[in-house]
Image (tube, rainbow, N blue to C red; front, side):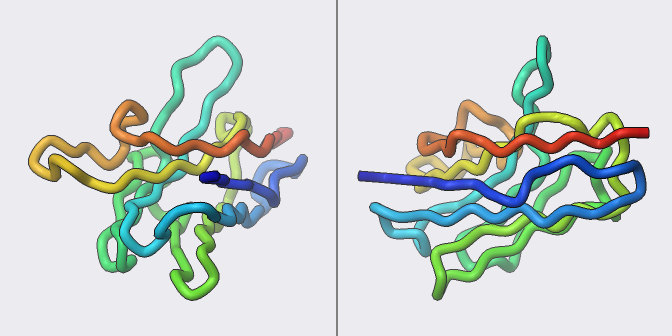
Length: 128
């Protein structure tokens, strides 16, 4: 059974930091690309950050560049998202996701539809 379990969300004031963690089980973590997505009420799910299988390649949406860092520990089957300088507009439910690429020439790392395994999310609330 594939499981992705997120944790680390919470309520912080603007300018604060949080570190999200996603623990994966039930599949080969090292062969899957990983991503963090977020969804605010009434909005579409948005790709925040993505990372290649070995961690050498990362992608970020423009609004978080320089503030968020995605990383992974393949020995621990764990994905991280370090979030600094948080803003109220970062408030959302955050999800981790995984995909094993079958068509790498069409893959877009921040497109939710390209991922096939999802966690249940962790809430991040940033107050001004």
